[in-house]
Image (tube, rainbow, N blue to C red; front, side, top):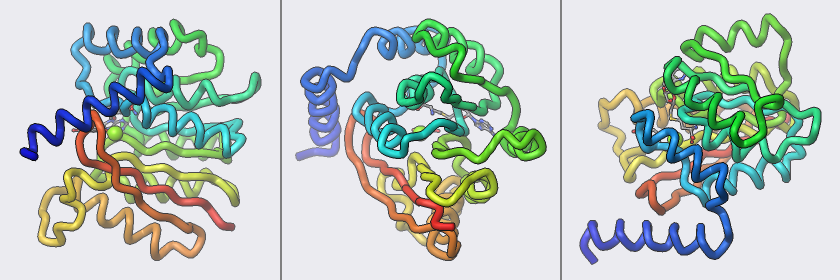
Length: 226
Ligand code: SAH
Ligand code: DHB
Ligand code: MG
């Protein structure tokens, strides 16, 4: 199979899974449509991965969720839907245009009172969260600028409790993560993140490779052990 055919198959299987499992519901479809209309990049998690995030939040019994990297709010909607009535998701976004689109999508999904979108570079807004003592979070989903992932994992740890789950998106990147000669700051950031998960005694983690409509990529998962 050519690379193109392989990609087409991953895409077709993601569509099949999405249809068969009923993952493409109106609010998520509307969020993607509004994001496209506003010219946002098409880099939200896939429908199956969005449901995986939802399930992880459910399994975790999450009441407070931190997200770094909102885009149009697709993953935020998936995660926030797992929250109980008094649960809250705080999502950090650098681009005010993305944040505005996300707020609209989150409101249209009926989640406005559970989700707060904060605008700013996450390295500037994370210290404020600590000052405000909004943590600890039960789950952190890290999906912003990859070069800063080591710092984001450290912040997630800072704002965690024993048992907190940390999920990092896009850690495989077409297999580039295993290129130890890479000078790409995103790849180096990911490699450092995995090394940090391994070296940090309070974290037990792994990474899983995935294929699908977003290509060949993967997640890192780590639990805070105390
Ligand atoms: N989690 C989203 C996709 C996020 S895409 C979803 O799956 O639906 C990455 C987002 O991170 C983009 O919106 C980008 O603007 C944002 N971002 C990039 N650098 C950032 C930074 N330093 N702080 C906060 N957000 C950042
Ligand atoms: C990119 C970022 C993402 O978070 C993602 O899931 C896919 C691609 C990107 O910056 O290219
Ligand atoms: Mg991502």
